Length: 200
Image (cartoon, rainbow, N blue to C red):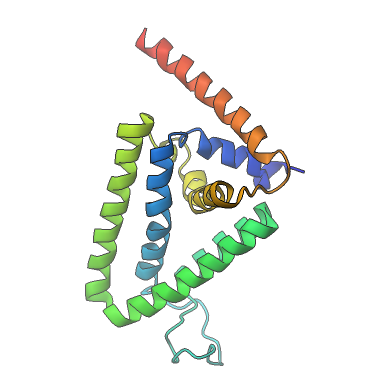
């Protein structure tokens, strides 16, 4: 059963899907979206701690896993994804947590002076790949130009759901993909009509 309002997964997925209907563009996003999230966490590792616990976390050296803006971002994304769908959302939340841990390990080893260069190079490569996907294959501007927050929030979860559906046939509930596909097709058709009117 679908939800409404902020956690209406059908609406969010249909919005994002309407900008990512070309199979090659979807694969490009599957390759590059999560590295953007990961390298963002690498950079955010160097932000000040929001909270310093009095205990050491697990097997990691003291001061390695910093509860800063990177941690906060990973928590926000993870909670949103679990709210969207418990099964896939829990997997996405786990990936967010692992990205935060991995980004912290990498950032602590690289140090700020090298880390920001690695992050910059990775971000440029990943964003260039995605813009090529949109310009060459999708032939439609990225979703972030129409709704920046929604595009950034949904992108990692979108590609994960696409992968789960393609590989395992997973859907959050029966009929999800057929319903979303109908909404995506309708939105694309409306966009094409608007585009044609502008040309004429």
